Image 1 (cartoon, rainbow, N blue to C red):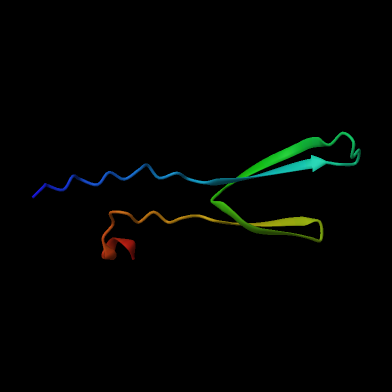
Image 2: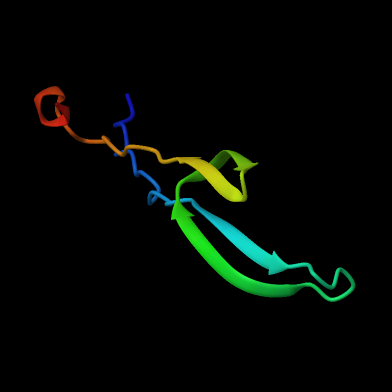
Length: 71
């Protein structure tokens, strides 16, 4: 019987969501005004009352932790 090889876990990637704000007062030549980066994957967003609400979710890495350490 062949001995099992140890499992090698790939490094955890931390997804990021980037928001770019443009001035479109001149639609033929939009200008980047600001950028923002949030940790996590983009989930949803809403523009309400001139405000942008962005929701991103981030994976909680609990690999290798014991149950009592997670709490």
